[in-house]
Length: 265
Image 1 (tube, one colour):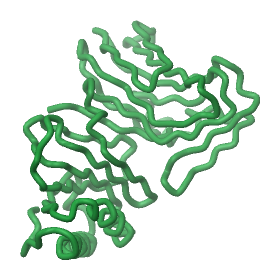
Image 2 (cartoon, one colour):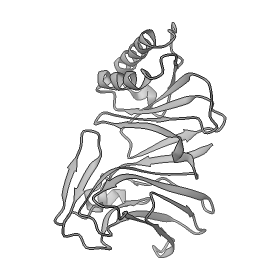
Image 3 (cartoon, one colour):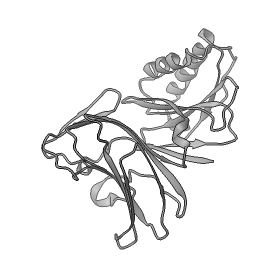
Image 4 (cartoon, helix red, strand yellow):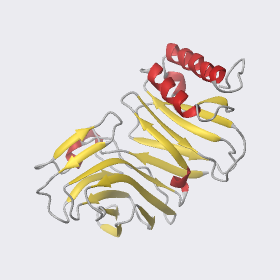
């Protein structure tokens, strides 16, 4: 099983350098950040794996990682010039002392989790930018982020479309429905899986726009066979939503693919 986690702009505003900044949230949940007076070396925003929930009310914004294991961080963003944004990862022990750090200016950064790590932070550091448009970052086993084909983020739902890690000629598309929203989107990529997958996270609202967005993507796969799987919190979603989703997915198959009497669940 390959690990892959997707994180968006920090939900905790105290984790963002807001002095003099303009911050705009787009419909697609990407974030425009502009700050003409931001000095080189200033941290733009921070994600942390550990928080004091009782005092701050904020949940961890990074996944748990395993000691001595190699991972890869990948960034999806645009900025105002060719000079990239610097990414820095700091690992802390139980005394909040830094025991190891990695930094780089590429869109991908490989690192190994040190022994004794209790928590860690990821920071975006300004080099010489006036603005950037941030979409998401991922952390996972090396090369796992390459499996992402397409993403869509909206207020009431997210979905991430991934290809099989080893490739496949099968025409099945598996949809894994999870309850959300989630600050950390976990994508469980099984090397044995031979079908494309779409990991959906939803709060049970805006089902019609969700179905329409899936229909648009699946319209490029006219012979696709859909399969529905229950993910995290699936059975806590409203029953009306589940019924409407199944009806909508069957309609997609009627219009484009091979129709089933029922979807797997």
